[in-house]
Length: 236
Image: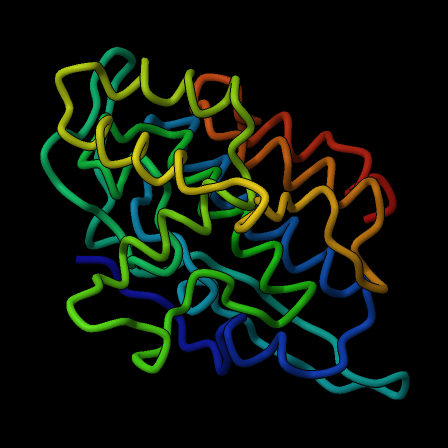
């Protein structure tokens, strides 16, 4: 049993405030330090999302500030020594999970890093980019198909997707599903790579960080220590 101190807010709600960029960076770096500590012990969180990053805010004369940041909800956390992986399960929340978690494994530390990249996007844009409203679904359409389509559209170049298919193995039934989704992109339905998104806080350094965290090939994703050393966190 894990017993945590009570913290008042999660990042899911806290990020909806007009936060200074420096404070958002500090929150994300604190959460990443917690994730790095887990990974150092070969612990994979498996349910990383904005509402599992808890924050204790404090007010000061210059506006909102924080006292503490903590990763919580470790009920899906698994000890995975090198060479071990989770297979046969779609671990984590469908709006935040990695492509390999959708494809039922292999799930290892890189899966957490992909989810952390989606958390970073949320913290900066206040958008849960894989949320799917029922009104968006055609009759008989599965929301997970839309999520996978968005994941490929935003983060999968040709090399990354081919690397991912090799990673999950040719015997995986998800290989055919992902190739069908890939074939649907073209002039009528172009991809929307995250690297080309626009926005006031979406600078080149942030895009490079998220690009490294969400590389579709799990073997090429940033590790937690590499992400902590990224230049976007250089002024934190």
